[in-house]
Structures are given as structure tokens and as C-alpha cells.
Length: 311
Image (cartoon, rainbow, N blue to C red; front, side):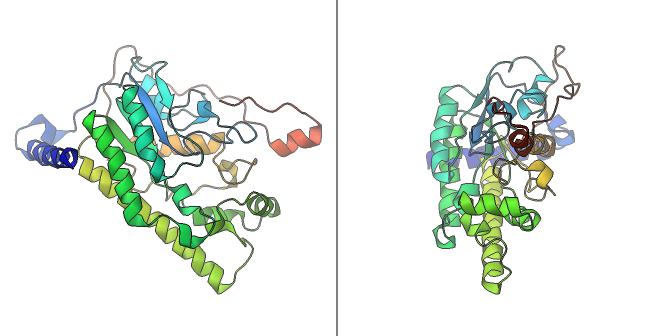
């Protein structure tokens, strides 16, 4: 496509400038101005699904565009550099989205004049009813590139996060009877989590293949980001490699990140992103701690009927 060719030419020129002796760019990467509008793109993870309530999107707890201090999201961290983005944190991530939905979300971000977006997509490409229905890697890559072409045309700065390690989720939850019950009754990520207590060779081989597919998705996203040029940053597999525990997982479904998990995502990814210009009005202090989100099982045993409000 024409946009892709322009993007590749821009990458070559940018590399020439960076490598040129005597240039400031050769010494350090130039800081970017704080974006006036940012947006989260992706699936239920970026939507903050089940991070604060029963089967609802808690966008306030999103690692990307959330505004709740318990998470200290990319958005709140950007506010530490300048107030231009204040109140302009958009979230176009939709639970259940696959890579097929990414270009449409990118179009919404461009229409909203987002200058910075985060992308985390692909868990649902792997979490299919059967292993054979997982999205082919080539299809995933093509869909990602279409979305990036939309963003490149508007010169949007992009940060891409890797998909979490789904096999690690199985490994830390397989001995938990409650987790296995949620996975089975909710038909959660069957390709990886079906027959979670089975150690049969065929099930172990299936889990390994699903994990390998996720790794391939992550590599495809990393390569697409590199082709985008200086306007894209990747976490280089940081999320996939993060050693999360059940303490980071929502007890509403034992699949999605809870508020602590979302905070870990923000903390793990932000350092891999852009260098931002600091304005005189920016704040750099960490938000004050807030009370943790209540454990739903504790609410059930106490007889409390009200659930925390969604974000």
C-alpha cells in the first residue's frame, strides 16, 4: 500500500538522521510533546473488564487510559509530564475483540484526533473454542498492519504491548478448584484452559501449541511496530514475560487482570514507551494509595448485595 511505502521511506530517513555524526539525535532520542488526546485500543484487557465489578468494563481501571489512582495508567503518568491530555483519555477497546476489529478501532481513534494510542490485541485470537480455530499468524499480521496504516496516515504515536502468557495463567490456576470451575463453566479460553486438570500428553501438547501461537502473534506485532518506524514503540515482550500471580487476576472470572494486575501492566509497559517532554505544570508524584477492590467471595459471604461501580 502507498501508506506502507511512505512509512518505510520515513523509517530509512529517520535512521539516517539518528546515525548521522554530530546530531543531537545520535546522542539521545528526542522527547515527544504530551499528546492532547490519547486512546486505548484492544480487547477486554485494555477495557478493564472485571477489574472493579461483576462482568463489566471498568475503563477507569484500564492500564492504558484509566483515571483511577489505584492503577496509575499511561494516562495518569502522562499527566505527570503535562496537563494537555487532561480529560482526553479515550477507550475504544471492546471486550471480545480480535485483531479483525483493530482497524475499526484505529479509525475511531483517528476521528477523535488521538495523537497517542496503546494497542494490546490477540488474546481472543488464541482463546478460541478449539485450537484449530485460532487466527493464523499471517492473518493476524495483516490485520495489525491495516490498523497501523490507518494510524500512520494521521501520524499517531503508537505503543504496542505483548499478549500475556496464557499458559502461565493455566499454570498458576490449574490447582485452584475455584479457578478451574470458572474456566469450565464460563467456557473461558477453551483452546488453553479446557480440561485444565489434565496432564495427558495431548493436552500438554495443545497448551504448548497455543502458547507458541501467542508468541508468534507477539513477534508479528513487534515486527509490524518496527516497520511503522520511530512513531511506534513495543514492550519487547515485557507483558508476556511478566511473572503475574493469582493476586493480579480478577476473582470474578480468574482470567482478566484485576486492579493490581492493571497497575502491573501500566508499570511494566510505560518505561518501554516514548520519552515525553516535561511541562512546568506536570506532576511526577505517584498517586496516593487507595483501598483495594473487595474480594467478591468476601462480599458474598458477608451478604453484601451491592457491587463496586464499573469504570
